Image (cartoon, rainbow, N blue to C red; front, side):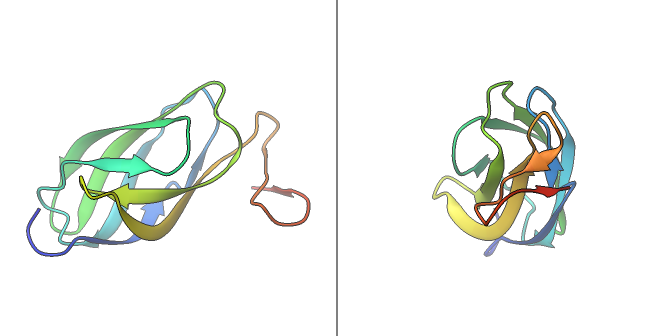
Amino acid sequence: MSGIASILDIQPSSGRPGTSPTCKAFGRGLSGVRSVEFSGAGLHVRIIADSAAVLEFDVIIAVDAPPGPRELLLGSARTATGVLFHILSHTGYANDGGIGSHLI
């Protein structure tokens, strides 16, 4: 990883348990990033490609992953990015920790 990596956005920013969406993270200094994780349980990441501004990876969401937000973490130091990926429930609703749930 050259310089300080930072992430500004991730697309798509949500997925359902039991799926494996391919995501793109957009930012700076991403060339050479070798480790991407998410906070919490139920997600595994496989990096596909990287460039200075885009990091592409598969997010493997476990069938039993609990709904809610997970923060994207970069590098072996697990640097927090402030960018969230939401695991949706099987019904299409996500509980984001606020009051009630909302359709995404």
